[in-house]
Image (cartoon, rainbow over all chains, first blue to last red; front, top):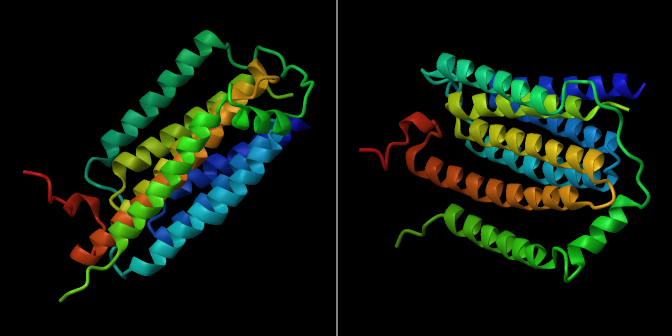
Length: 168
Length: 102
């Protein structure tokens, strides 16, 4: 049962991803991106990471994908996306396929495909543990605060970069 | 329960799809979306390793949260750059952005 659900969600993720990189209409690509991100959120649920699945839907789909669609709508023009790939795309395709084959070969050395068993049992609620770890002074509270500074500076930077220069 | 390697295969495939998109697309927004796909592949790996290798020590989840933060910051700045470039040049085709090329 879990296997069927996993394969379904994986097809959703990979199919959405393929549509993102191949769709010639950029709006269709953004819709496929939402599909793919939602599939990733479903994979998180299968991995018992319910909190991350919620954050994935909120941040990726609710913020990032919507921001991308806003930008697409702001700057879309007709006839601009008729050629979606550059001149090197066939070579790049070979590189990507080779990278995938290489990754699978390395993976097969370390974890022989499909041979190992299931996941170990969890004793504690992962969300509670994650919260404790993120705010523990001996844990990740310093990276947590640095991340907030990063977000603030990115916000200021985005405003400064995208602001229209006033002409005197 | 699905074995760990299945998640790793899906993540590897998603990463390579994103790699192809980053290197082959002409539209800057499509490149940003492909980068999102690659970051998501990394996140699947992190969460899968957390679940299968050390489920009582959520370090992988903590890293995934930081990847979320960095992805959000990256998209905000990237889209601001794209809008700024569009204002100046009236297109967002990356091949034609040759301001810093010689």
